[in-house]
Image (cartoon, rainbow, N blue to C red):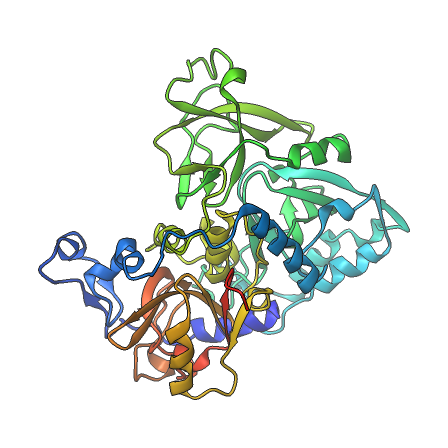
Length: 472
């Protein structure tokens, strides 16, 4: 599915790059127009629409709690059971060893793509791909292979092959890498099943993805018991800003200016357990948190750090309300689109994943899998345009809209148009053909009249709508 999506996106991205003809500049006699008068927006988007409160104010019972934490955890269990182990992974089910099936796991994800590919503008030859195949280290997989347990020490990439090379379908386009699978947040538990021939990469499994991760980005535990204990977060902070950054300190290279993405969970030290100083500072007006770092031998060491109280974080998960879903998504507005988490950024499904993670949800990573989560579902298959609008008229804001290879969050209807917020590679304005598709590559607001590279509108491309928490 991901390779098919990759092909579709490469076709979209290969379209002629043009200036977006219907981009307009916000301008109206209001506070919003003053603030955003120099911000280009999609057609039919007004200055007021660039503010979360505009949409929140249009939602009935916007601040009503939809699901409790217990209900969200039940939803997570149902999601894992529904989607199965090939999509969501029960990390606790891994023992101390894994059998020879490990070879098939790795090989199934490491197929050599067909077509012309480039690294640093140079076309790749067969020898390049053979070198990557050798790094898979398949010859060292036996009938029983040791399993190790670890945690990510900062945001990191998951790759189909153990390399940092950016492998692109165009010599000059460095923003689409066929080997990029996804990204993991800091402090994410992982299970390490194998390592590359040069020892620089681990083949690791997270709760929602598996692939090659730089070994330097994972710290290992002595045993599974210690790892399981570290996975339990009783008192914790959740990053609720698009990103927050720790302060610079000369006392910890690992934690100095460490950036944490939305949805990152970190242990919060209780007031009675806070030390007198942290990094030679009295921790006044700061949260004291605990984060994993990687020692020289690759093992984990937890360190205290200070996080200023002005950072955009929550003590515990945010209440799951429609107002909060919309508000969280707007914190990413204008951010760079990042295919598979490239460029330290988010693609369409990672935006959805991180927004919903702020409430404690554990969604699958890819857009197609998010379209299969077990909740109230509206099916657009075979529906006319008018019937599709009737479905949207009853859809709650904050719901997930799924089309081939793309996910958006629904905002609402204004003057007969249906609006979404999303991280998009690009789209064409209403009424245009494929040749005018623009490489937008940002988190934007647009209505559903925009078109895909095949000329079909997003409205007529919709497959499913997912409304989490509404009784079916």
